[in-house]
Image 1 (cartoon, rainbow, N blue to C red):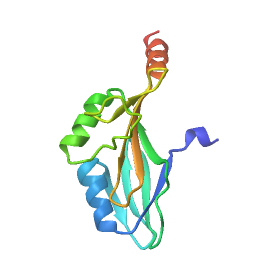
Image 2: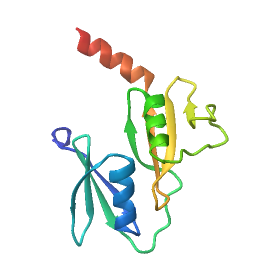
Image 3: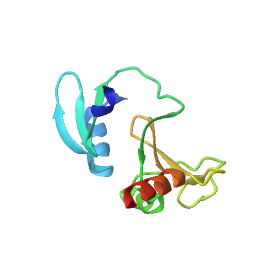
Length: 136
């Protein structure tokens, strides 16, 4: 039953204006609405509900991420839009902030204005399987 539904992400913020400027202006999400309950953005046919929470501490792990086909291009695009990529000590690509896993998957992290950790990732095995499935 849930497989036919669209995902909705939930992200906390302390400031709707800063959140909207980041998600819309930097990440390219589409503004849907702002009411007493949440700032709603759309991305890739899915929604992100950004809810005001006056006192919260951002989680120490990723809360929202995007799977992409070309992580280098996306990270460069983000950087050119003023998004600061996290440069964790284990990240091999110090210039772009991309970590390559032992299996060849790639991940890069960045934070929104509230300190929430977001990511982009490229999964080598998934892309190969998808190409095989859709080329037959």
